[in-house]
Picture 1 (tube, one colour):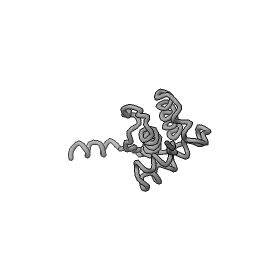
Picture 2 (cartoon, rainbow, N blue to C red):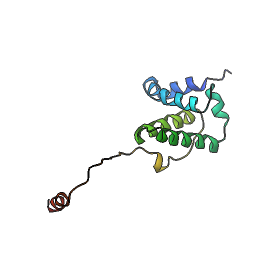
Picture 3 (cartoon, rainbow, N blue to C red):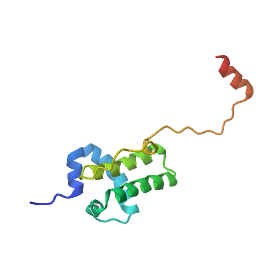
Length: 118
């Protein structure tokens, strides 16, 4: 019986459109870990695979990607493992995308009072 390439298996299971969306992030993951053959990743233990995915998320955050983009990249890695027979377990809340709002604006005392009066 012929062994199926992990990338081909992954694409067949999630569909071409989703595969193309995940592929760019997964290629960053491969480059970051100096992996040329994705099947090497499937030889890792579940704990090591989980650690690699989490390190990749932290790397994306350190590179100033948004939380949402980092979460999508993390999901791409988890998807690869999942569709190749390695279930990594439940996603921690930290890795789920959430909105980020930042501003340098400081409300005046009058504006705060007006907000409460509304």
